[in-house]
Length: 255
Ligand code: MG
View (cartoon, rainbow, N blue to C red):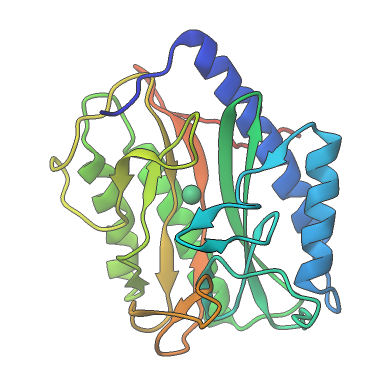
C-alpha cells in the first residue's frame, strides 16, 4: 500500500522537508578541510535541536545494530551510511555525501548532497554534477499517471550516457510518518513499469552513481557501504510530493 497523504499530512511533510533542507544547508556550509565527521555530526545535532527536529537515523536499528550518527557521512569511495568518527578528518580533494533525515511533528524529511572539499579533479566533479542532474531528471519524471519506472529510467539514462555505475542494492523510497515507506524507487528501470504515481504520494528520490563498477561492499562495522572496486561515489536526494501538476520538492532550500 502506498500512502496518499491528506492535506494536513502534506503540510506537516512540507515543514519536515523545509527543516531537513535547512539542516543540510547549514551543515554543508560548515564543511571545511581539517574538520572530522564526528564534529560535523555534533554540529548537525545542534542545528536539528535549534529547529526542534530529531534525527531519524540516530538510534535506527538494523538487526542488533544501532546507528550511532545524527547523520550519514560517506567520504570518497563510501556510498552511504558512513559513521561519524573523530579519526575521519576531511582533506582537500575529498568529497563527502551528507545524508540528513529529520523527524518533525511525526513526519520525516530526507535529503542528501555530495560536496567537495577544496579542489577536486574534473572527473569527480563531473560525477557529482551528473548525479545531481539525474536527481532532477528523476523528479521531472515524477508526474501523476507516470509510474515509478519513469523516475528510475530517467535516472538510469544519465548514468548510462556518462558510463557511471548505478548502485542497485540501495534505492529511493516512499516517506512520511516513517523514513521508509512503500514504494521502492530504484535508480534503474523501465518507464511504465512499477506502481502508478498519484497525487499526494511523497517519495525520497536518491540516485547513487559510481565512477567505476556499481558493486558494493559493507564494512565490518555493519553500516558503511562503499564501492567494491574503490571508485568514488556521489549521492543526491530530495523528498518530493506528487501533485496533479509539477512535482513539489519538499526539501528545497529556501533562501
Ligand atoms: Mg533516503
